[in-house]
Image 1: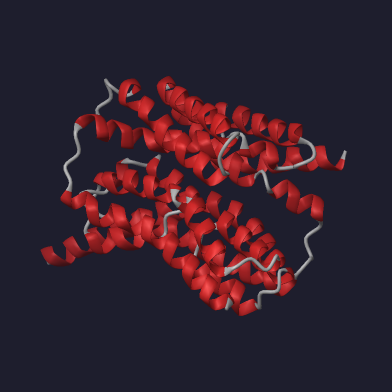
Image 2: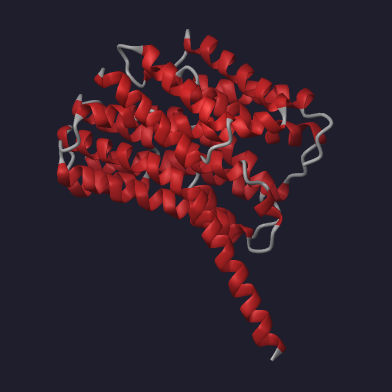
Length: 242
Length: 98
């Protein structure tokens, strides 16, 4: 009897984690689908087949680099050139993954692996502003659910874009371009309200990004802004114990 | 050829993502490194938001800026992220159609 009750308890706590993960994953879905559709349309015009453009979303799962990749394929760039540019653009995920995995120390490697594979700017931002779940027993299900929501939205959206082509009016798709920025802002502002110091970290990172953009590619500038801006946290987060 | 490019892109994207999952278990970080890593999300958000938000409409940077400010206000009054996103989309839509 007791084991049955125990089982029920773990199932319901697992369900709760999944549900919470889906709930926080929803804004990512809202941001991803229009962008994924735009990517699908653009990749199709760039000469990729429906299979190829969807496969790219399945295997790469990194928006900005896929836009860039499709563009460079259309321009007839070489494979090595495209792959190096992708590496540069996506290298920021290394820093983000290091930060996220450091939070997930208690989680099994078999869960850390898929979570790290599904790391994007957006899943990282949402995951790392929900640090409580990392300490809970079934916490990985929370991060798993939000990551899968993001992943499926991206893959399905890309496919739809490839099938539908140019159906979304340009003003609407352009307006959707603000979605992910708004989500980042919607995540950052409540943290700043709680703890003004993290706002300083963000502003320092912005300034470093702006300065670096004058003499390097946007990929490296974001890496520099994140790494150097984050260093200010060594002083600014001194009294924090999280 | 395109398939080769896709696989190459996939590998160079996966490696930096996965590598930390293997190394964190083997490393003990000093206190200041932990503080640095804990600050990364906020620094990343800052670097991702600005100046990228100005490029929402490449010809009219003020549209992205206003959309961003609308998001700041909506988030500040405590609305859920979903409504922050919807509000920002609406404001950019209104600004571009005006």
